[in-house]
Image (cartoon, rainbow, N blue to C red):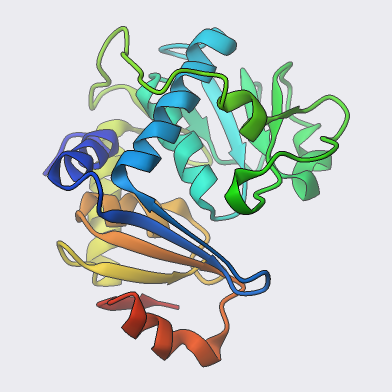
Length: 242
């Protein structure tokens, strides 16, 4: 068993950097985005550099991530882990060094004690918001200005904090929780898992457990039940979480 979720992600990239790792669908808009391990690693690195160089964060600091299931949320969480920063997934406001959210959730995010607020419209092709809410910086615009490679000052260890809320977990604890959840959901090593985001909004289900099992994910928002069988076939999925 890998010691951290970040290590499991790195293993996936080394194993086959070009293979799809997260494929994202929004059946309402028709959007489809396929991210290889290399592409997601690039977003992870840019996010980590944003946190370290842009915000000045490091070991012992915490950010809040208040987003629906989405590949950009995966990049932010994994980028925070790479930077040695723990993540609070809410919902209760706590003092944090920065918060990342969406326009619809921005009014709630304003209740979190922090001076650094980022917003993403979760738009196709990671487009920028034309007008971010007052007091918020557009994440897709800002993150693109940062470097494509990230070198941590010190490596993340299993004893370091991973999640600061709603349950506090070290990186080692998170790996164990992901392994337990993978067993509960029936995720096997190498699976390609189609996930209904509405039924499984917890990143433990759609991100951490699959990574721990070296599985890939087809994450579907506004999933059309009538198209599930076709998508399972075209995406060559071996497991449905709906």
